[in-house]
Every structure is written in C-alpha cells, then in structure tokens.
Image 1 (cartoon, rainbow, N blue to C red):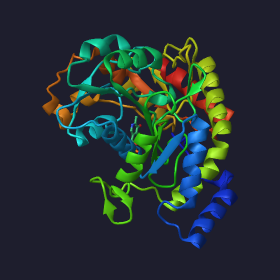
Image 2: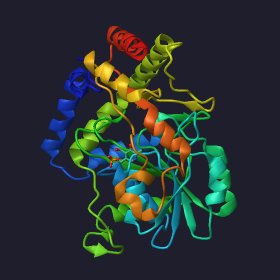
Image 3: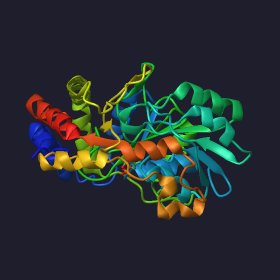
Image 4: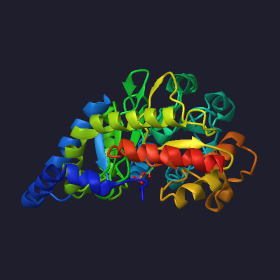
Amino acid sequence: MIPFLDLATQYHSIKEEVDEAIARVLKGSQFVLGDEVAAFEEEFAGYCGARYGIALNSGTSALHLALLAAGVGPGDEVITVPFTFVATVAAICYTGARPVFVDIEPRSYAMNVKHVKRAITERTKAILPVHLYGQPADMDPILETARRSGLIVIEDAAQAHGAEYKGRRTGGIGDLSCFSFYPGKNLGAYGEGGMVLTNSPEYADTIRMLRDWGQARKYHHVLKGYNYRMDGVQGAILRVKLRHLEAWTEARRAHAALYNGLLAGSGVQTPEEMCYSHHVYHIYAIRTRCRDALQQGLNAHGIQTGIHYPIPVHLQPAYADLGYKAGEFPCSETVAGEVLSLPMFAELTGDRLEYVAGAVRRSYRA
Ligand SMILES: Cc1ncc(COP(=O)(O)O)c(C=O)c1O
C-alpha cells in the first residue's frame, strides 16, 4: 500500500523536537496565542519576505480576515477562479461580497489574467489569485491590472509555502497573502492553522484585532471581531517544522523531477513548472482523459491517489445561486475532469516512486 500522504513517518523523523516544543507550551501554559505563536509569526513572515504575519486558526479564517481588512463587504465583487478548493470562494461569500469567476490558464492551472480585465466592474474591490498545487499564479500582469484599476490583490497561498515567483517567495507579493497550515500542507500543523502576511501595518493591526474579538485591548471592542486565534501548541510545532521546510521542499522537487522523467512518453501529461516559478509541489497532478480508469488501476496496485478538485466551484450545488452554468469556464471544467494527484510527500522513497510511475504506465496502457 502506498499512501497519498504519510504524516506519521514525518512526525517520527522530528519527534524529539516536536515533543520538546509541545512540552514547552504545556509547561508555560500559553495555550492560545502567546510567545511561541508570536515567534512563529515573525519567523514565517521573515521566511516569506513579508513584514507582518498574523497567525490564525485556519487558512479559511486568513482569507476571511484579509478580505475584511481590505474593506470587502456586501455589494462588492472579488475576482477569483472556479478551479480551487471551495474555501477560496466561501471566504468571499462570508463577507457578503460576490465571487466573480475567471477561467484558469491551461498550463499552470492558475488565474488567466487575459480574462481579468473583462471581469472588472465598478463594484470590483479585489483580485484573488490562487497558487494552486504549489505553483504561483503569474503575478506581474495581475498586479499591473489591479494597480491600473485601483484594486487590492489578495493571494491564496494556502498550498504554496516557499514557492517563488521570479525569485520572490509567495507571501510578500500581493497586498495580503493567506496561508493554511492544515496538517497535509507542505508546512502543516498538528491541527488547524493559518496566517495572513502583509507589508501594511494598517492591515496587520486590523487583522490582529479581528482575530481576537475586535479588541484593541482586553474587553475594549473596537471592531466586530471573531475568535480566529492560533493555539500555542500549533505555533510551537510550526516553528519546529519551519526549520525543515526547505529540505522537505527540495525533496518534493526531486520527487517531481523523478516522476517527470519516469512518466515521459507514457501518454499522461506531467505538470509543467512555469518559467517564472519555483514550484513546491504541494500536489503532483498528472492529466489524462481516462483519469477515472487510471485511478482505479492504481488503486488495484495499492496506490492511493486524489483528485484536486473534481468539480469546479461554479458547478457546486452550494454556489448555484451565483448563476453560473456548465461550459462557462471550459479550461477549469476540462482540467477538473482530467487531473489525478499521485502520492507526494518528502519522505516518499525512490523505490516507491518508481513503483507508482511503473503502475501509471501499465495502468494507462491497459
Ligand atoms: C487553495 C486553498 N485555499 C484555502 C484553503 C483553506 O485552508 P484551511 O483548510 O486551513 O481553512 C485551502 C486548504 O484547505 C486551500 O487548499
């Protein structure tokens, strides 16, 4: 059995450091926010090249508060993509604003900036590109379009810890950027977690208040806030794991290169690293028209796979009220029907990877 992801093996490789960090938090009893979380904010912001980091209880909360800090609310429109995890779109709806979809680009699977200009109206407040699978969207033309129209750019970097766009890490490129530390992410907590990064002291102050009941100081509620604070234990664990992130990313990149080589000429399409990007392969997704049969074939070989994501958000029943129809975003719809995510994690061994690639070739031929 080859799992899609193996968090237990990773834990065992850093067990002593993690156990020590957890014990430190229990001893100090700073269970919510506290010194470990504050240190993690500074370290992660520094790693990404941003001035401020505000640690939260999930990536969804990060998106929600980044949008609120940007002033997004009822009557506004936010341009994003339908080929993403549903949280991107849900967070826009939480603010009362309307998500406006544009199609993705067929090679990177990220926002196709060509469609953005046409989607801008007098109600548009922000553009929200998603760095899907760990590869940044093409940010320069998005930023330029936003600047010309006075729009705010919020990056959904939930899958892109350490990914680079033209040599700059995601997290310091747009006005605000949002990360998830869900356990399976490249930098994952042992529970839920998230962070907003920004270079703006005003946005940072607002988000810091919003995550903690809108308090400027204890029991003085300046804004209508939320309980979106990060746990102390998660902050301490994430500090430990951040020290290993670069090595894990390099391992993922090496696995991706090996998969690419072993699958060349197999008939399935391997992922493309765009010339502007340093991909961190949160997801390694191949593409084929016979995806479902291939997935069954791999399952029969004891190989776990995933589909990220089988239905674009504009076709999800929960978002039918937005009024979109099948056929409106052809690239998103085609890609959603063809992608298959292979096992990808730093601890994957060469033997197992070769076994997976061999099984892909055999199952595809069959
Ligand atoms: C692209 C994307 N956006 C947002 C989120 C939401 O993050 P979380 O699960 O931490 O709320 C996720 C992760 O699940 C994601 O993959």
